[in-house]
Structures are given as C-alpha cells and as structure tokens.
Length: 242
Image (tube, rainbow, N blue to C red; front, side):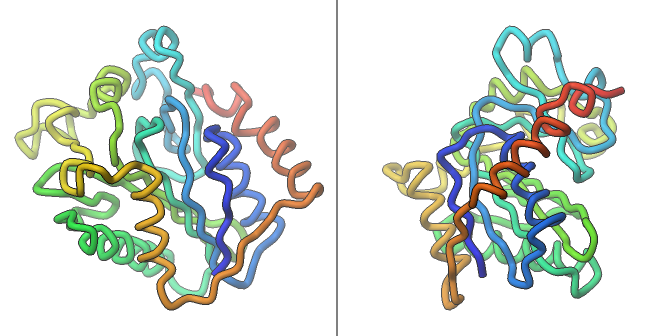
C-alpha cells in the first residue's frame, strides 16, 4: 500500500489532478491511498449541469469554488470539516467489487470509532438514517479510482444553501430537505476528537497490518499535476460546462 501525504493543500483541483497522475501516468501495481481536505467547494459529478445542482449566486457570494470531478454521481459540498479519501487500484475485478471493498473498509473503520455506520444503496453511508458519506468511481486504463467524502464537522447550513435539492431523490423517502437528510460524524465520537485526529484514526484502521510506503512527489510529478490542473480541474471550460 502506498500512502500519499498531501493534506496540507486544500485545493480540490490539485487533488483530482493527483488522482489523474496516478491513474494515467504512474499506474502503480500497489493500491494508493490518500486522505485530503478542501476549502469551501462544490464538487460536481462528471455529467452534471451547474445550474441544476448549484445555487451559483450563493456560491459566488460565499467564496465557494466549483470543481468538476471525473467520476459520476451527485454534487457534494466540502470544506475544512469534511474529510475526503481516495483509493486507486489496479483493475483486477469488476468495478462493483472494488467499490464494495472500499465501502466495507470505511464502514468498519467508522464503527470501530463509535459511529453507527451502515450502507444504503449504491453510493451512500448513513448514521441513524442520515447521510454521512457518499462515494463515486471512475476507471482510467487498467486502474480504478474510488473516492468519497466524510461529513465530519462540515458546515451543513452552507451545504444546504449552496446545493439545489434533487426532489426525485428526497421525496420518495419522505425527506423534505437536504438538511434533514445529512448529518455530521462529530456528534458520534469523543467531543475532543479533532478533524486531524479523525483522519489519523481512519488511517490507522485502514492501514492496519498492511505494508506501507509513503510517496513523495518529484519535479516531474509536480509538473504533470500543474498541467493536468490547468488544462482540466482548474479550467472553467471543464468545471462550468453545460
């Protein structure tokens, strides 16, 4: 297992570029794990339309970035209280199996620290019926990237105001708003557990009994990351396309 230590950078475009660096260029034979965070950001699924998912006026006033990822799935809001994870692996099975394995690992790690986590549907993890995590996936060549978010201490009011609710998804479950569907992990764990401590706990649980090496970017890596970022994830033509 390779661990990428880059959480000091809070730019979603950078982290999506790192994912692409590993899936397109490095193509490690070992799994690659990352934990990361962002400043205030809405992440769109690959095929989503900004105007249908984001209160753009509120996002602009509040300084919320909009970044489109390469995977599908729905729009999410992330900030300093959100923990994101990425696992990149050689594609050895159906993508569904890779997704199931990641979901099980995250759920087991959450349960060990006291969170009543359970799976719902294809892409969600809940605590007592409310969403605390969602994940998505894409393939590139012979590698699969599974990534997701964990609402640890996220500003849920900001989340509610910037995302436009999907009525088709909420109403069949009797849910009247995004805010009533989501919750944070923090109320379920020790009161003095910080976001950094939460990340460390997750890392320890997920990497237990695994041979671990840390990856450090070289100059060529950083050059490629900058190029991917400028051409794609920091490019308005990609992020705001209709």
